[in-house]
Length: 285
Image (tube, rainbow, N blue to C red; front, side, top):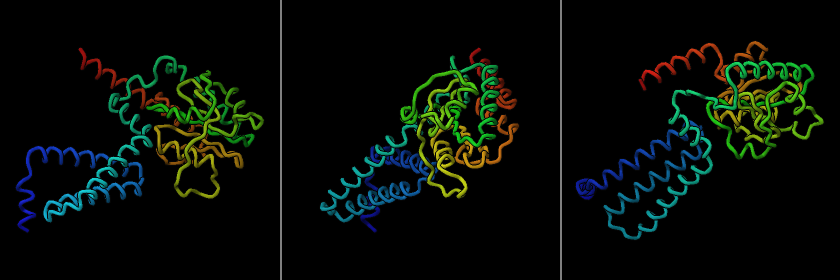
C-alpha cells in the first residue's frame, strides 16, 4: 500500500498533463467505436489500455525492470491500433471533420450540384425511374450523398460519369444488358457521379428475403451520411436505408419525402436552412 501511495505522490505536472491527454484520446476512441458498433475492436483497445496501465503501475511499485519490454510492446500495439483505425475509418473521420467545420450544413450543395429547383427536377426524374424499374422488376441501388461525400475509394470501383441526372439515364444504367447494372449509382445533387460502384456489405443479420443489394445499401449507410434506395429484382419492392435502418414497401409519396429530405429541399429542411442563414448573417453583421 505504501508503494501504491508513493506512486501517486510522486506524479509531476507533466505526468498529469500526459495522463489527461491520454484519457481524452481514449475516451474519444471509445465513443467512436461504440458509435460504429464495432465492439470487437473496442474490447481489444480497452484491453490494451488496461494492460498498459497495470504494467506501468506494477513496474513502478515492484521495480521490475524486466517489464520494460512488455510496457514498450503495449505502447506500440496501442499506437498501431490508433493509426490502423485512422486508415480504415478515414472516410468517417473526414465526415466528422466536415461536420465540425460546417455544423449547420449551410450551403450543403456547392455550385454545380443543383439549385433547389434543379433538385426538385432531379427528385421527379428519380421517382419516375424508380417507379418504372419497380414495375418491370429491375434491380437497382441508388446512393444519394447527403452532408458528406461518398469515399473516393468507393467511387473508384465504378465508372465516373459526372452526368446530369435523368430517368432515362438511370433506367439505361440498370438495364440488365448494361455492364454497369450490377453496381450502385452514386448521386450528388442533380448529378450522377459514378455508376457500377461496389459498396461495403453490412455485417448485420437481415431478413432472408433481402439480398446483396440490401446488404450493400445498409453497409454504405452505416459508414457514410447517405440515403440508399433499393429496388428488389425479385419483387419490385422499393426500400430506403438511412443510418443503417431500412424502410420497406415505399410508396411514391413516401419515397419523394425521403429524397427531398436527403437533398435538403423538404419543407422542414428549407425552413431550417433559412433560419440558419438568418442566424449566420446576424452573427457577421
